[in-house]
Length: 337
Ligand SMILES: Nc1ncnc2c1ncn2[C@@H]1O[C@H](COP(=O)(O)OP(=O)(O)OP(=O)(O)O)[C@@H](O)[C@H]1O
Ligand SMILES: [Mg+2]
Image (cartoon, rainbow, N blue to C red; front, side, top):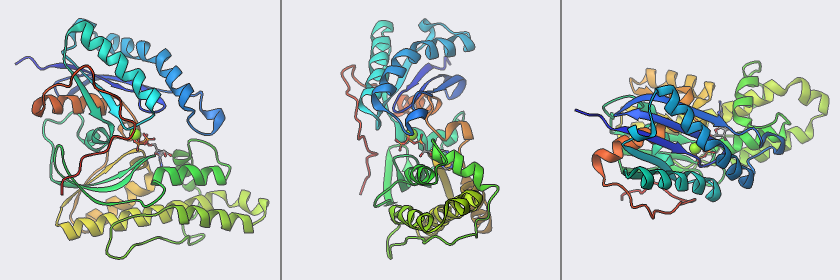
């Protein structure tokens, strides 16, 4: 049987990415991280769109060349439709529509969040549903009961900041720089996670999260100390903050899995790259004989492999999208009742 060749395109934020799949098999992928934002301490939306415009063509060309394929070999296109920055999404979506029209091939608009969830199974021909997913990214912190592809139940979510956002904001408070998550993770390795006990939020009878109080607590803590103390204990403070986040995420996830009787847990999103979260979840799941899936580090943050892979699965269960589909900056997973 001829396995379809799928081109995936991702431009929702500050990574310009393309990937090529044959069936469920990854042939090649490229993620170009836009460096222009570093000087601003965060993503500048207009610059992100302009960089996507500049980089997307060469990135797609690079993927095709590396896999030794031509444009004409592509059977379908999968592109991130949302959520993300409106202008950034539009660049990828317009490019994908142009290619689909020119090559006369089907187009699939992909929900970026589904991409993150199923990034765990890139290259696999089976999806081990049902499972509990802890989705922790820059914009999301959710516990999702994944019954099957497209069938989701929201179990809990953050009431304020997302976990990744908390990492980025605390990194800024500590003057560590941007992007905050990976930098806090790195310097925490040289610190003591028991140096200071930051408060852990909890909501009785709910699996919700909250991280804005923790961020304020870090701010109040550092305001009380002098600059020399902060400087010499930066790894300790970072590790203590990280431990508070990991503690809340891991305990809540384990409790939900127990209560729902699910014996598989899947981590997804940029914060799933956090080494302490991965370590803690491995320990806790081993203790309770729960199977843990953690995405390959390359597929935790934004990438096009997860988009093309979702395109493969979408093509098995759905009709292609029309060429007039719009970008949805606030696209959500659709949750059943
Ligand atoms: N090792 C790490 N430890 C903690 N946080 C991390 C790590 N690596 C990345 N992050 C965080 O992950 C976030 C980026 O993840 P991702 O690219 O999935 O989010 P996003 O695309 O901005 O948001 P969304 O997918 O919700 O729209 C950032 O907040 C970043 O700080
Ligand atoms: Mg993302």
